[in-house]
Amino acid sequence: MSALHASVPPGAERREALRGHAAMLAFAAIVSGSFTLGALAAPHLPPEALNVARFALAAAALGAMAAAGPGLRLRQLAQPWRYALLGGTLAVYFVLMFVALRIASPVSTGAVFTLTPAMSAVFAWALLGQRTDRRVALALALGAAGASWVIFRGDLRAMMAFEIGRGEAIFLVGCAAHALYTPMVRLFKRDEPLLAFAFWTTLACFLAILAYALATGALAAVRWSALPPIVWGAIAYLALMASATTFVLVQFAALRLPAAKVMAYGYVTPSFVILWEGLLGHGWPAASILAGVAATACAMLFLLRG
Image (cartoon, rainbow, N blue to C red; front, top):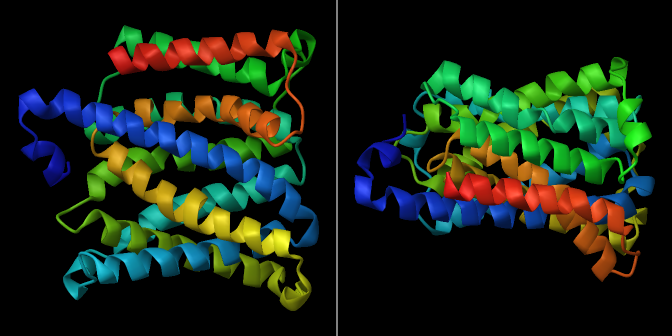
């Protein structure tokens, strides 16, 4: 378990938990914007190439901030397998997401993602001994239901017709890797500064995704100089906000909250996507979908009180 968690006095635990919740709320707001911008960039280059550029820039940004701030030291590479496991686990999630989206629809993969907090709770119990009480379990179930309602756009028949096919099964493995990542952060964090920890993890993730992109030949097919400005804008946002910033936010929160609560903020993302789309003039959803947003909000309040 992390040194930070062990050193927090009991009276300060509530304040630290609230800081963790605030970090994950910011995480959900930032990640939701990547869906809109990513959709604008996706037609112009393969997802593998997009994510190589994304994580290269994210690693460079985190490395620069860590070097200018707490510093990068060789002693931070003690037990380097920690970063390989953390970065590799994230890379498995992103790579399998690429593969799954070629077979399954975004709606069905979004539905599969709602299983992630429950899987994270199981991994946290196995690795850290964290137990999920009834209130948190109820909040997770309510959040999953609300997020699913938003993902399926309030169509009950579509929800009932959902089936696990090959693409969904592939993404389920990816989601399991993503769920495993959060408790692993607390398990593997030592005394290195958070920025340095995030940099080494991101660098490992980048190297793994780069290896996959080279193996598939996706990079060779891209004419980087011919890409329109919207692609570079999307890459900058995905790298600096949806990768570098959110990696730090998740690691910050994972040291202060149970893994299931950290992952539960993924339920808020569809609601923030709705907000982004509406503010950008892409239209607002039907009133029936707002029931899912309300259910998700109630779930988050349960988690906050818990």
